[in-house]
Image 1 (cartoon, helix red, strand yellow):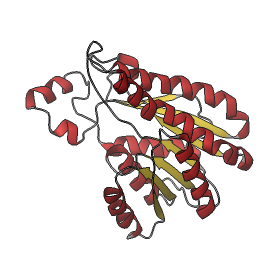
Image 2: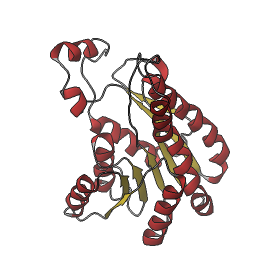
Image 3: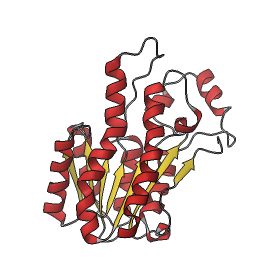
Image 4: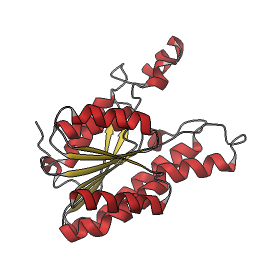
Length: 246
């Protein structure tokens, strides 16, 4: 059991899917969990669920693509809990299309939410983490950052950018005892994959040597490891969690 007692974690995109599993895993490990989400109804249900276990959990509604809103969230978390030890940049969206049909708005929106949000949130937490001489930043990339994917030039570009961002920031802040790592999930079971046809699901499984999709818990456990003392000497790396796809 990984112990995150007295650690304050801030997670973006925390109300559903992988983010929800990360919130649950961190809370179970004793962390004070704060998360950012856009849907207040879904978020409040998760807060109530976590608090019933006796854990501390708070929700902040914000657009992580907006730097001012990110700074406001960080100020509020520090005001309430005194510090931020762990930042998980998990928020992400897709807006798929072939490039000949993709609108500039779709490119800008996906890059803003999936990549610029890392700059916004990481910059906002950096001075407090440097002051405390401690921090764990975990960024959510994707297997498509390495493989590419037709119809996802915006998404794959953003996720590839996350790997470069992670390596660069890790070198900037390593001397301050702040680690920066990325996780690159493969195909993870979700509402979206559940809605695929049997033929589509089988085609997806054929690309995975383990012949199964991952679960959100698989990614949450990886984040838990990188946030823990077990990963104190790991920084600037990308952990591939994909069932052997690459």
